[in-house]
Amino acid sequence: MIIRVRQAAAACALGAALTACGAPTAPHAARPAPSATSAAPSRPPTLAPGPAGLTPVFRNGPRTLGKVVALTFDADMTADQGARAAAGERFDNPELVAELRALKVPATVFMTGRWAEEYPAQARSIGRDRLFEVANHSYSHYAFTGDCYGLPTVAADRMRADVERAYTAFRKAGVPDAMPYFRFPGGCYDRAALKALTPTGVTAVQWDVVSGDAFATDADAVARQVLDGVRPGSVVVMHCTRSAAPATERAVRTIVPELRKQGYRFVKVSELIGDARARR
Image 1 (tube, rainbow, N blue to C red):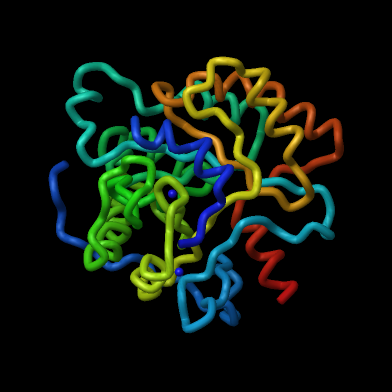
Image 2 (image 1 turned 60 degrees about the horizontal axis):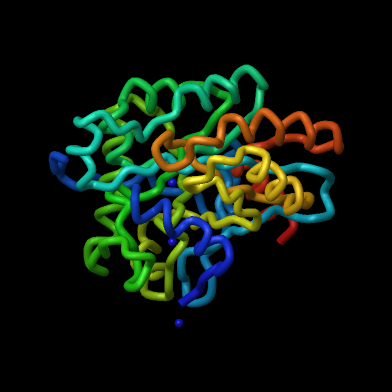
């Protein structure tokens, strides 16, 4: 399931879902990300740091390397939503994951640490399936800036720890190799947030196509919005939470065959980042 740098249209569409979107563990250092010049072929590709060494931000892949598109799914759950989950609210969407598998669609799942704690078996299943890759969406799903659609805010001196805590939750759930990619809750970030995350070595991943699936009930409208927005190299943001995005699975059933009919190939974010890095 967000200087101020913002993709206004995408963040606004997600804001409502993100405002609706445990037991503490000791912070653990995130797996160091490889540098952009690393020669190790087995390491996930990342972008070189931005100006002044800030965390780099990735929005889409190259437009000139063929019709490829990355579907990404935010598995949102905030640190304080345990009571709602205990009362029966579902923040997961196993039917969507099953549909992606049936359609053989590679995807990147941006998962919060709290989600992995609530659904460890699902986190482990996704993380061990080579069709998917798991990336970091924070532990708490609290905002990394002020004024981010009503989300609680992570203090600047706790931002790094929040990201590292998510990686710890993934490991405890049995996710073997979470990627060194991070998506800001709500898509909101600023220079201070990028600076705070520099030591983690992550590449921040935004998007260029917002699906509009947040709280949507019209799957056809979601599908149309994605199909109208996709271009070669696009990153599409969607959600993997039944309570906040109940129409996503049905929309995917339309999106995937139509894009394939148009000649698109589905890839993970890591492939797009690798393409972008090779072009620099």
